[in-house]
Amino acid sequence: MDNGESSYRRFLLGDDEGIVEIIRDYKDGLLLYILGMTNNFSDAEDYMEDTFVRLATKKPRFSGKSSFKTWLYAIARNVTIDGMRRSASRHRGEVSEISLSMKSDEEALETRLIRDENKIILRRALCKLSSDYSQALYLVYFEDLSYEDAARVMRKSKKQMSNLVYRAKLSLKAELEKEGFVYEDL
Image (tube, rainbow, N blue to C red):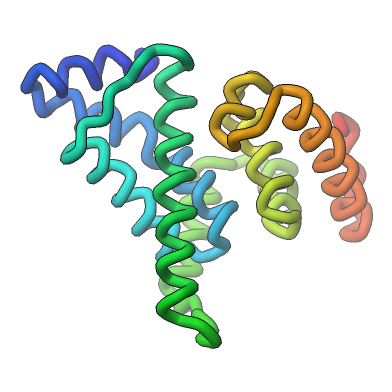
């Protein structure tokens, strides 16, 4: 997998295979990132699809100031936040329910991407953290973004991201200890 930039450039020049490659390479990681923001598998899928639709239809300019992945995740974050705002204004007071089939889809994705049992426990603990904490840890440790790139995605300074990751790790450690699990790398 290249960094996605060349695939996007090819897509902009008319090669539809470029967008197919981007979707194939980034859909699973993007879905898990958005799921950490929404805590709803169905909504996360919708926002992921909206992100790729925006990429394919609006064809935003990639300036190269960050990595392609950072840029794509920033678009996904914006699409998700906008969608959550629209949804909140439409569904004030409604409680969303996740059907059993959606839950099983989420678990299948989680199992396929994170096979190691310790990482599954870690992923579930991440879901219990605040949205900012889980986003920060996910971007830095699961997607291997630098603090600087993660800060760009989350619209924070590098120092804010460093502090956020530090506090998120402490919160995650406390959450794991509640479950009786001690994770040595924290």
